[in-house]
Length: 185
Image (cartoon, rainbow, N blue to C red; front, side, top):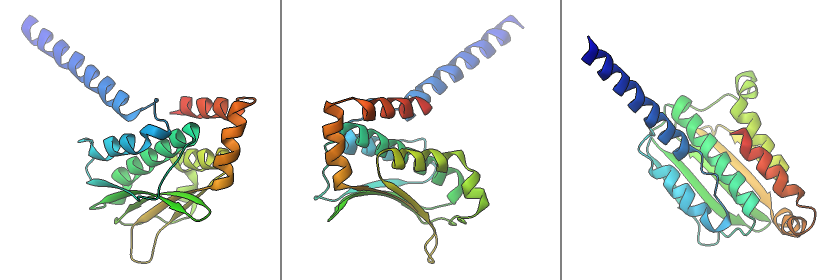
């Protein structure tokens, strides 16, 4: 009896330790512009995902704003978590690229798709991703293409990134907002 209780206690302690490690792995709080691509690569390489993930960073992609990079990472993480939970996909792709007027982060899966109706609107993850995009001055689109799957796109215009860098040198307000958002997750 005593050895069984000790074994159970060891298993419970190991499970708690494993959960702490998993939680730490999912919450990268030190993502900045220089580390964004590496953090996203780490995200897709994790063995916790049921669905294989890959990262595509277009050669033209470049970001300088640390707060925006951190928020883009968190949007990508939430989209990958949602795709793993709900999409029944065979693959998830995270893509970063520059556009003539800004940049885009796209997370695409080849799963069952999502209806853009009431169920999506009720989801906390959708609201948090949308809020993160809006705080940065960006836009979040979630759509299900006719061929299937789901595509989450976060568009960030050039003028926002440039003005945010100037604001960061002033009042510090965007940094405070980014820190408050980081605390949500």
